[in-house]
Amino acid sequence: MLDKFKTGLGVAARTGVLPLLIGARIADRRNKPATEGIPERQPGFRTTGKALLDDFFLATELVVAPMVGPKDRHRLGRELDRFARLHEKRGWGADPRSYHADPPPLEVTRFEERRSRWIPYRHMRFDSGYAPNPEEPGRARWMSYAANRTAHAWLLKHPGPQRPWVVCIPGYRMGHPVVDFAGFRAGWLYKTLGVNVAIPVIPLHGPRRVGSRGGDGFFSGDFIDTLHAQTQAVWDIRRLVGWLRSHGAPAVGTYGVSLGGYTAALHASLEDDLDCVIVGVPATDFSRLLQTHVPNFVLSAAARLGISFEPVERALSVVSPFSFAPRVPHDRRFLFAGIADQLTSPEHAHDLWNHWEQPRVAWYQGGHVSFLWQREVQELVHHALEESGIAWRRGVLAPATA
Image 1 (cartoon, rainbow, N blue to C red):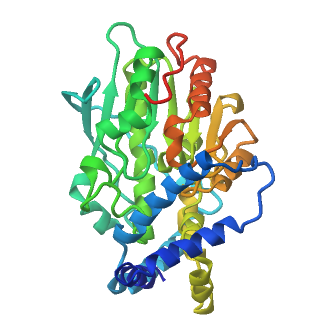
Image 2: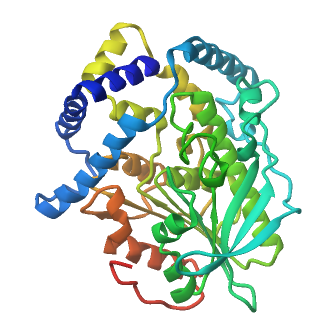
């Protein structure tokens, strides 16, 4: 289905039909009934404008994002079938935790002193060491992505006595220091709240990219690659957190947005002793994400052809936050989400909120991109870090445009 969908988008872009496809998707979405527990979207130009930013971002992705081609159709089916058999053989459905090997301690690292537009930082590199299970399909292809085998992180560390760390997990298409520092208000976290900040680069992004842009290949429709990317993301973060603790970190919290929110939620189910986890505008279900952004008439046509998302959902269940119970205490779990989010609908956050037994959540009248300047988001992050004992000192909120 995905290769046919991509081919259709190419034709749509050349013939001017693409706006109709996007319009159909928007109509599908806006005709959905409200979900109980999610505040109502308030009418008004500001909220609509924030939602339109999301629609613009999505439109550019639909036109230019690389997708698997027709020649890969049969390979994808074979790989999903092979993984389904291995899934059954290993019992990963009953015990998804057993799919995730415990990574070894991180010992060899390389550092380079660098400076972004606003702040000096250390560029950390280390060998990821991740490899898919020898029996898993797609292993050789995944290991052929040479740049992805080196893990990277940007570190902001205060001199003097050890301080708590916040590990900020970036979203899709992030992975550049300037973008990552702006997206997490790293200057505010570091200078005003006084915490150390570590921002890992997730697989296939930034200097780890294998396509022309960071993120290419993560959501290309090659679902076994998506599985390995998400598994490696958590593996690398666990190694980074272990390294921070071995070097004296008195406390460690994680903070992820968008795809990074998914990763933070999964990591909080595998990592012991995290002091807090903050998940923002998360995509918590990759299969739903795809189906949300494909118009209903396309999905209906796929169903008539007998095309099912069930094999994809089974494969990705081993990296789904919903397959695990969080190990972070209830009062140290925090979420925020936009009521008008057009990229990862608020139902993603709402379902995680319920799965996490309804911890503190901040809903705001805005979209996916607008979390960057929403006051409610900064207040939640501020509260979470202070309540968890991670903030080194009591800080003030940064200006909304910072």
